[in-house]
Length: 93
Image 1: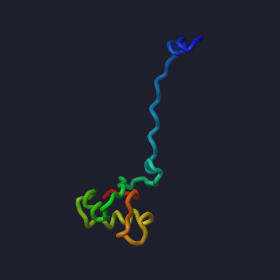
Image 2: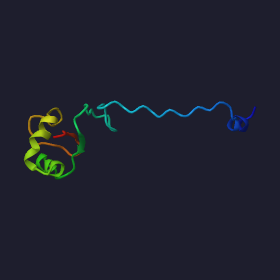
Image 3: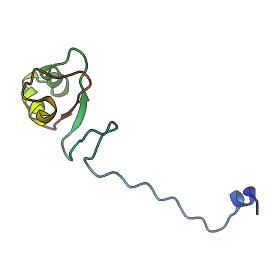
Image 4: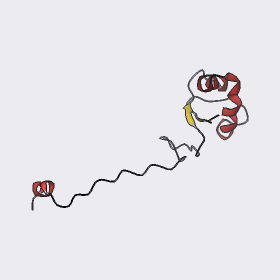
């Protein structure tokens, strides 16, 4: 039996099962943790602040506190000190 015989074999064919969907949460493409139910992620770019991110994501700059609280472990004690390239979780409101 050659390769072409194998490819053209019309024996019992079973449908391909779809891949299982990943569980909620887990990690993003870069390996950063994104716990289940926490919303989307946002990568900090030059010129960003938490209030600018809140304005673009929520339409209200005053909601920067929600972003800070969800990312305190990444940002640290100073909410004014975010760094370009940080991947922040944007919690659902």
